[in-house]
Length: 178
Image (cartoon, helix red, strand yellow):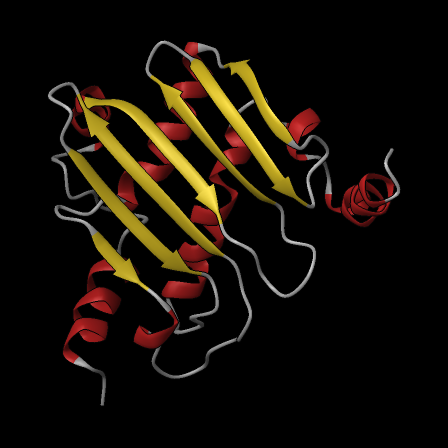
């Protein structure tokens, strides 16, 4: 039997790809002034970084581990890139902040997976945060998690985050001082 929180989350998030909690994608995205997106470490070569991006396309990237560039860098996203990023995340935007961590997983769970934390800010400064553990493998949640985790790929961040093929090389080069 599912825990009450997990049951509600499973039902709400299983249909996320088709619906939004904010009266449609366009209306929800219009209310969003900025989005912060971060990844937490996993047991492996998961990139660990955070970004903050505002509606104008001004962004800050902070790379930590298994990324092409460590440290802080400014980046710019086009209006189309902002829109694609915001639209990809919008179906997951909760009405109130939600943490869906390892302890809430029911059924199949993969340990030592990454976590994604997204914070949406509106023009009044109000924030809503989703904290999502990627190891929950319940049907519906796993598919949504992959879509959520890869949302950063809508932005021009490949040169900063890097590619999967290069992640181990980045860490080895950086450990050697390169």
